[in-house]
Image (cartoon, rainbow, N blue to C red; front, side):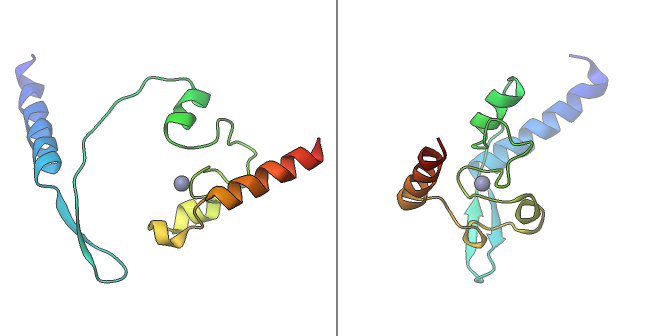
Length: 105
Ligand SMILES: [Zn+2]
């Protein structure tokens, strides 16, 4: 490894290890303190596959609701952070959307 960048990589991996094992505290809008832990993954994919991995629709360019899980619009993605702020897709919503698509065929 090149010495000039090796210390930077060590610093990042140390921080990622800490984030994975201990996490950090976040206060929600309801004043609830939660601990968030995480890890990092890299995925190589074309756009449709990358969107699918992230839970987005495969082709989101013209979609009104970009995410198939939280049904977020572009404006909501820019302004909202918490899951509670979105209308999550459930079985009834999914079946309603399938019915609408079937009726249009
Ligand atoms: Zn979403």
